[in-house]
Length: 474
Image (cartoon, rainbow, N blue to C red):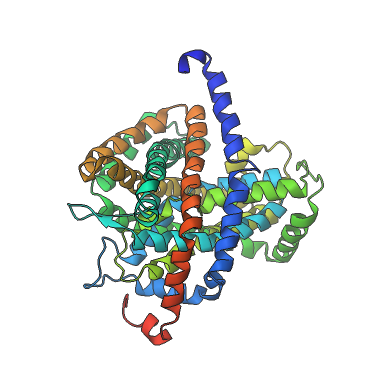
């Protein structure tokens, strides 16, 4: 097949066209949104009603319970999931949504998170319910396991399909593209201060740092993620709040603009070319789903490792993924971009989205703003590498058995420096494509297994509140 595409650019264009179809307005975006709405209603709006209980469960989940099975504490399982979820999409993705869809796109990002909370609740609950234990003691779960164990042997082909898509995606969206983002941003920051940084030097540093963490397995990844994710998110959010404090008088107007533009579009202004309501919905939903990954099937692989006695408890933590990722971190980025006015700067295109966010922070914070955004991008990208190693490893274990785990981690680590120095336009397209293809088997399983989640949640919430809240994970 490849021989018929002698021109690599033609092949890349084909991949891009297929990618546009999969992630376009007629397949994945409406499907993800519809599933989120169906699950939210079916759960009787538990993700919204029980948000305080979810945070309380997260706080108690910091400790390991000696009588419960699993590999990571519920908190570290959540942090491992967030390590892969909170990434460059929280900075670059938000800027892209605003540039292409106007401020109204932010409202539709909020909507994807609001209904995505139910999707993540179901994913995490099913991941724990149908997980397995490998001969060497690893707790493995995720869509491939709840498809196989929940839907039965006749659906094994669908489980295998997800595992194949997940394995391929891990090397693209979870590895090479992230390493490339780290290199590009560090080189650019150095250039701003007259320093010439060679990409291969950064690649070697990434290789060493990644190897130290990844070869140690899921427990070491969970330990690092449990520290890195809260710290990096707090630093970025704190910096964003400083910018908003400087522009506090503009915040109410920014919020009004978001709601108004969501339902009326936004006319051309400054360097902004204007956007219709359809554009606001399309780019808001697309970038929101890309950021919080609700429905893609990646996060439940991490949640399946949790040391917990009831699947619904981890479901509560799972639903915090979109809340923290989109409703908190992405909202901070969006408000900073809007109140700074940089989104109206002439000449900024989609390719300059990362620069747009840095400029927005710099308006209020000077040179420190560029540092903050660059450090945020680097840490977010590095944490994504860690989280996606867990995802890819579990997919490989499903396909080839538990002995394939260490070889996979070694290969995954060695690919990191390749991504750091390579030209990745085609890899980006393939990564997006396989990332999107992961969602289709998962969404089918979520709809078919939703009665199981509804039953488990009813049983859990029928228990006395004191019984649900007692103990570290009791």
